[in-house]
Image (cartoon, rainbow, N blue to C red; front, side, top):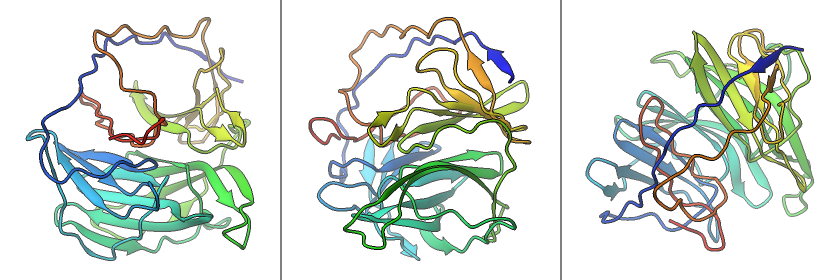
Length: 304
């Protein structure tokens, strides 16, 4: 099994609470998702005394919230779903639409005109399409989305939940200007990460090699302290060299390799207090930028 030793990069982040915003602020929630389009943060769904179907947009340049007038095939409210941004096109996959009822529907939101469209993705040539799920990761790497893991309900009665944790891997190729998409099941080697939901996944690129890094998550009462790191050029599973280290996967052959390090990275110092502890659910992203904004989540109180 391949062993990769990398020196952790220690950043010096500084927390700053954003105040003075105007406009219709979303109500508190958790299980929502957020993505960025230029200076905009788009927030959709989530849950708080029911599943939320609202779409809110925050302009980071003007510090204003607004609710766009959407049209088209508007999806039902959902929580713990997959959300990615490809230019001005946003994709929503899966999630919980009501208690015990999960989705495997795929929707596209064209933010240039705030129009929703339901996409009918073709099944893989070999194997079934992704089953309904929540808590999965949905990551955009180049022109492909990668779906990993999540939680399914094997009960036909939504009120009688029979949980099944997943560690399956699917890819979805996006073609510019086309709504025709097809699921694929990448051929993988190496032991895959254990089944999990509510994990995180990010894409990195170093030396022309893209990697999908999966970390943490939950499997029943077990919290996953290991992740899976994967290069987008040869999926290969890796078990970390210390507790809490991420695993990886190379994406091109799909091999799951192993990250090792002698000691875990130390937490960086910060001159400001971090946000209160909460379950990580919003996950706004700005790739290649310098600021990360968090909104909402679940702690002792549902926060905004």
